[in-house]
Length: 154
Image: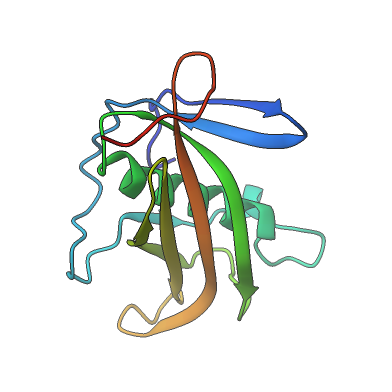
């Protein structure tokens, strides 16, 4: 899996599932800032399928969260947790063998939060020059201290 070895923690806090990214998360998985290089790129495997034989949406959501977390962690040397994932749109199915690219960019910065838009495209197996839009989401990350309390980015 891309990003293997990245230490993150997940837990429930105030009824919300939280994924914590360490402040030293500096993965060299892609370059952002206007380029079309993805933040994360993953080949979908048979273990990722649902009962219908397409890729389970939860797998895509997990990778969206990772890609967004990488971009959020580049905004400040802080621990970030996933506060909300909103406006998730599953546009087209993803299949085994597809190479799925996650393009993440910052669309908003608050006092304690970073909002990231993640666009997901799939290159169909056997058609490497064709990218199909498959999912889009907006994710909000909040900087937290060791006690899990929100803290300023600066």
